[in-house]
Each structure stands twice: as structure tokens, then as C-alpha cells.
Image 1 (tube, helix red, strand yellow):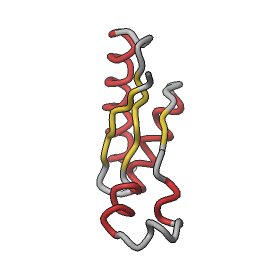
Image 2: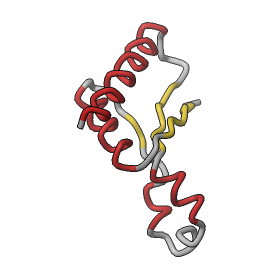
Image 3: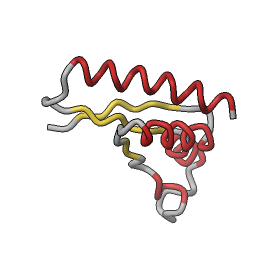
Length: 86
């Protein structure tokens, strides 16, 4: 069964920069909650909209190896550092 680790950032702009950097490294991420801000059933809850706008999900399942986890972690750090310099 797939599992995801949520990673929260201080704002959607930072999240989007990190998302782009990790994509360049071949790491597929998911932004599960992108529609919360536009859906009339959920967009009235500012806390939910804020959380959704600042979160990425690192997908992990039973096939992932420690070496791949290390690769994700190192590239997450690199992506965060790159996002800070912009």
C-alpha cells in the first residue's frame, strides 16, 4: 500500500520551488490537496486552504530502498536550499 510523508513549507511559493527542484532530480511528488482552495465545499476553511497550499507528499511504498530514501532526503535538502536562494 502506498504511503506518503507530508512535508510542509512556509507558503505555496516555496513549496512550488522545491517541487520543481525535486522534479529536476527525477523525484515524483504529489500535491494532493491543490483543489481545496477552489472547491466551494472546502475553500471557506482558511486553515485547510493554508495547509493545502504549503504541503507536498513524498510517496513511499514497500518497494522503496534505503538508498532511494537517502536520495530523496538529500535532494529535498538541496531543493529547500535552492528555494531559499531565489
